[in-house]
Image (cartoon, rainbow, N blue to C red; front, side):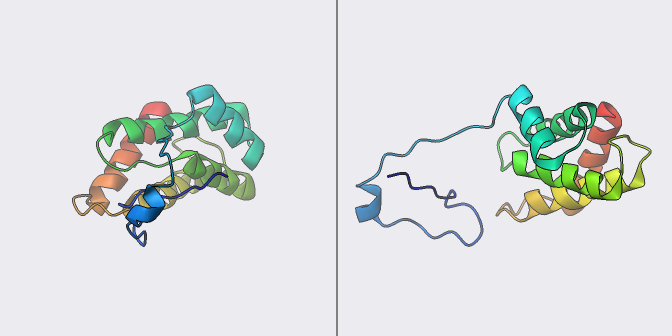
Length: 135
């Protein structure tokens, strides 16, 4: 059987009992490689490959900056892609819908995790800088 669980550091997650941990082997999984994340983002959201590439690069850029903390997953890429598709937006820095989607989704993804030292303004500034860099 396969059992999945979020790390204890996530909000709302309780520490696993020792008896349960004694019956399991923990395997920590990392993030997908860039090409896989692009393919997943395209498939799940229906956006173009160039838009998916930019979104994945922004999310990966945020991961690199926050490498010692919690980071957004491919789920954030998919959510941003779905918003783009719904709004008929493009992953370019001049598209206000795209910028707002990135700010809202990535801020939410990072802020929902337990990490008291993350400042909301810092997250937003970082996301805007990444959008400028990759778009």
